[in-house]
Image (tube, rainbow, N blue to C red; front, side, top):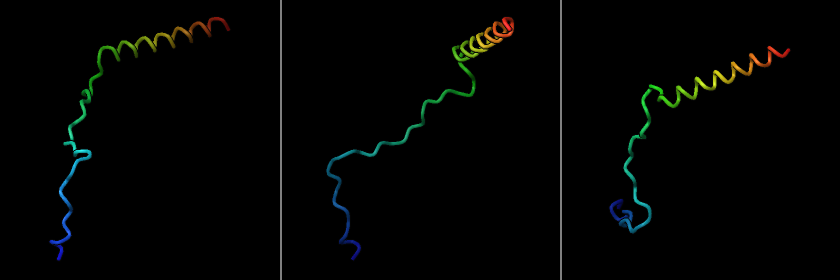
Length: 55
């Protein structure tokens, strides 16, 4: 009896897409990230020195 209730054949619509791994970089930081981080630290340090020198 279950044989009679099969789903109709697929007739269009969105097709299933096979899963692919995301291209995530490795654990190492890129050069641009390191330079940006260093610049941010230097800007914050310079701002702190400027603020505390004018107090």
